[in-house]
Length: 308
Image (tube, rainbow, N blue to C red):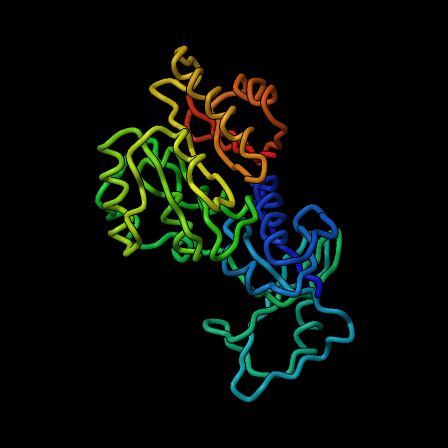
């Protein structure tokens, strides 16, 4: 079946990489891209919808022989048209081919017309809602830290890796545990390591707050290589006070981390880097692709990369 993901305009690269990862996990492939949509084929759209973070909307593309649509007695619908100003509306014409009761507030089915430089009639399967993506308890978790990664970015990074339910991810710089929390929310097993005992305790308290196992251990990130059965490493390494100017010790930490992931050849890694210089260093150890560059504030841009 043919579907399309409407991507956020400022996150096309992340959206495409995330969708690619989910299609690797559940089967399918990207079949095309236009100015608004990434087209894809899959037999498991419900799996994609359950996990996706960087799609504004996911729709099923309707063919001409799908119309007219006869709704059941208990079904209602709403329809919207997204069109360019120079296009004449076809809302009434398309609506006339959907036979059933209209409910603009709580419809059981939604239809979307794309009337732009292209024309599509679709059924909406998913619409992004940050309130649903982010657990409402997140803001009240026991420990916070100003450099903690956003749960949306954490979720997207996990999806980019292509892991699925039952797989095991590891975060060697676990911090407050956000990546582990998001993995657990998606049914993915997760373990973490952190060198700072305060962060270990706080991160484990956060995991327990969400009723997940306290799975962060104290130790150096290199311990990750001794954990059996890891499918992917997902992490946001520490940046320190300044992301643009690194101390020699911080540069050494990154080079040691690059050596570690290069040696774990069967494990996919998705992680953040704070500056372009580290991309050059990473290229000396392993192949990589840039998922996206996300500006956090004036002195920090998270460069999300995937290896191999």
